[in-house]
Image (tube, rainbow, N blue to C red; front, side, top):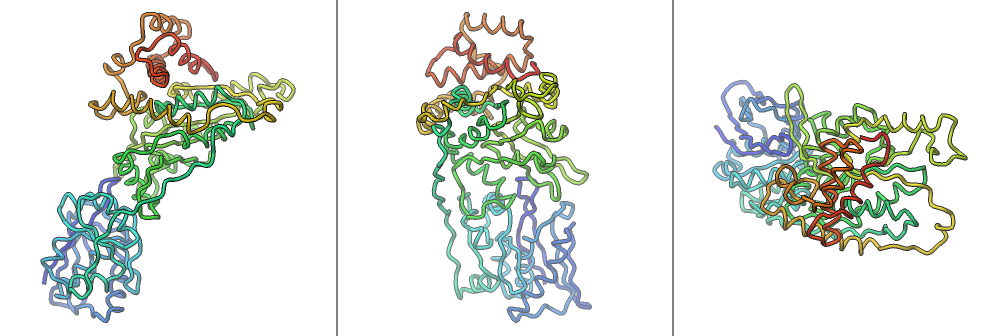
Length: 504
């Protein structure tokens, strides 16, 4: 007897189709799984055996061979339990072979036959839509998978429920996408006293997705300002939400079964390892930079990260993706994120206060900031120095615009950029434009060009720095609603570039 069905094997964000074949042959009873299975898949034999026994279904007294095709594709994960069990039930005619051969399923079985939630239901639904097969997965994952809309998705609570569905005793209802309530931001920019320049830099960073480095004394408000960035960012577009959720699905972070439209905000501790930050480890999973895709990555105490960990950010910041290379895997994840970094000016943090600074000032400050390499520092579009807020300022009533007011300006600037780059692939904001597009949309007026040329010569700006000043200037002009990039825009962009030693 021979029966087959479909499931998937995950290769980064790609769910590759896998055909699960079950063959029953005469001979001494045995159960083997071939096709490069991992340890978790090899142990599926015992889980499937126990689940069938709980349904009073006896395993056939024959040689059972499960083949996972293609055989040269490495496979891992406990989600192979359900398709293996379905193939066996079809082989012994308890499920219709023709129907099982046209479905895709994934799910981990408990010993009682209940289905346990798994990772990756969203990418699996994309592959099921490509193959034009229905998808059967645990109930907790079904509303997540239904967001794709390319195929019919059914939530299965147990192996018994799958049997009842295909025998017609109790058909399963088709799953529908879950709608998550929007997150209400309780933190507002008006909560922050003073630091007008930092709040202005945060607005520019949000409008054009420009990376921002804040250097300031302990307690001056760096973390408070970064924590309020989500309150001024626009919601994810449907395409961005699906792409971001696929990363979170692979990481098993879509616990509520729905897709959120709020941009992710990740803030790893400075002791995080390089695999935790860029991805890797067991199964070459996504790291913090990929979990922050289309959102924000906040790295506090930036110089305290390991040097190798910081240097691993250089290529992802430029390319918007990271490739994790291992001996048996080359996995690619997207990581187009907005980096907000915060640092003290020196190890003790009091470099800017002559009464508290140590005897090594200002050498200690240069040594501390130089833990951030020049090439990495050059990738920050905006750099600001923050001083302590005077006590009198802390006692005053809040001033400045609220997060809602700033969010309106950011949304208007983003709308201008969306229209501007609508016909250009992989370009969504001013920070993404390059080549001829950059020189076309960011071209300054004659006076603005003269100012930029003078600054480039006097401060020895690198080619990357030159182009980043143009991009920031374009964003400042968009926030002001100006068509041309002129001297005020160039001047403000340069003011954010020529601080935070060492200069590059």
